[in-house]
Length: 148
Image (cartoon, rainbow, N blue to C red; front, top):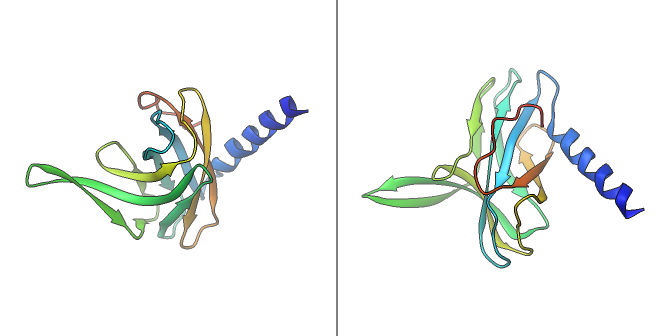
């Protein structure tokens, strides 16, 4: 029974991250392997295919104590990380979360994140419904994947 439930849940998560034209699309969601109790970061791309501006207002998951929107940027030759209240996404704009730039911080993860595994993260938007994202645990950024 468990062998059937896990693949079905994974399929549901993957399909929910896909979108029809005129919607918000999430792709290339990944995080690096991380030990239990550490912080981790989720990277992804968000493409607003709609004709209306929106904004990412937060994220949630049961794999960490908290999830925060962050931006890193150099400040006086030191990389500074700032927590953001939200991230605006203009109509037909793509926002790419990359190491050393935008990311979703997983604060104090509750399980080891091992290569080849997946975790679920829910993205919250100001106007769009929540989107469940299947985040791949990889050592390096995956190849471009618009097919989810």
